Amino acid sequence: MVERCPRCEYKFEREEGFFLGAYVVNLGITQLAVVAYIGLSIVLTLPDPPLLPLAIGGGVVATLTPLIAYPFSKTFWTAIDLVMHPAHLRD
Image (cartoon, rainbow, N blue to C red):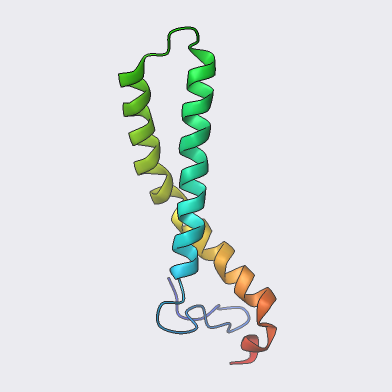
């Protein structure tokens, strides 16, 4: 990731540990994806849901979702910071 926005010169990483918020956003997205996968899978396979395939699928979702969603969570967290601290745009 570049240090500053090429368009507006916004500094992305404000301080050490700035992207901890992006980690929290990514964790929330991953948890929602796993719960949605397992819930939908159980509903679709009623009355006898296969536990092992559901557990393996949940593990796959829990592994792939954060890898796919992390760049978006960093962007989302940066947007939240920009809304909360608009004066930082001038740094």
